[in-house]
Image (cartoon, rainbow, N blue to C red; front, side):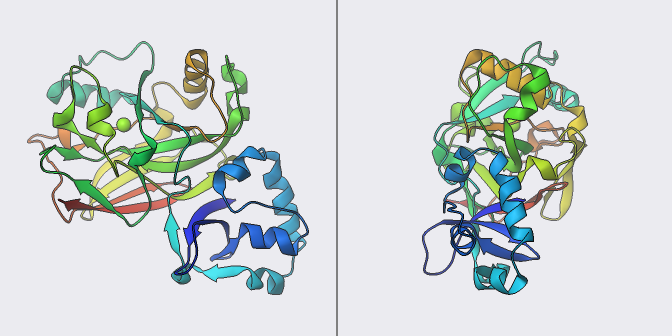
Length: 302
Ligand code: MG
C-alpha cells in the first residue's frame, strides 16, 4: 500500500492511500467500512503493521462507487511529507556505500577506510519537508549545498537488541529521503549543523508498506539534478544492510514505531566530483527509488 499525508485547499493534513491513481482518505474510508481508521500516519503505524492486511481486505470488499465517494484526484490535493513531524530525530547513516566512502575521502575530512561499524548521526524533525517544496540555501551558513538520495526505513514497532534475522519484522515500510548536506558546516567531525538545517530532509512522496517491496536490498536509486543523472546505484550495495543497521541501532537505543532511518547515499554527490559541484538557487532535484516513486524539490536561496 502506498500511504501519503496530504491536504486539500481547505483541510488540515490528513492520511490517505493510493488506489487506482486516486488518493482515498483513510479516515473517511474507515467510516464507510465501519472500521475506525486514523487521519494521521503515526497513529496508523501505531496500530501495527498487521492493520495493512485488514485494510487491503476491506478495500477488496468495497465497491469502486463507494471508494470514489472518499477519493480525490491527485490534481486536487497536495502531497506532504509522509511523516510531517517525526517524534524523534531522523537517524542518519554515513558512508554506507563503498564508492561514496572513496569519493568522500578524496574531498572531505573522512579517511577512506570502510567503517567497521555504522556511522550514526541525526537530523531534527524540523528538517523534514514534503515533495515539491523548496530546500533552503541559506548563504549566510553555507556555500556548499549538496544532495544525497537515500532509502528511508520506517520502523513499525518498538524493539531493543533486535537480531538481524528478525529485523525486518520491525519495519513498517519505506520511503525516500534527500539527505541534504551543507559540506562547509561540519564542525570537528560533528554532522548535525551540516545535515540538520530546516528543510534538509525532503521526504516522500509515499510511504510504501513493506509488503509491496519484495526485496529492500535490491532497489535501484537515482538522483537527477536539473535533468542530469548524478547518482545511480542499488541498495544491494549497502555496506551495512537494513538488518545490520537495525541490529546495531537497537543495541544503542530503543527503536520505536515511527522512527525513521536514512540508510546512506551512494556515490555521485557534488562534494565527490572533480571539480566539486554545489547547488544554487533554482536547482531541481529528482530522486527516484524503484517501487516508491520520485521525490522532487527545488533549491531556493535566501
Ligand atoms: Mg547521507
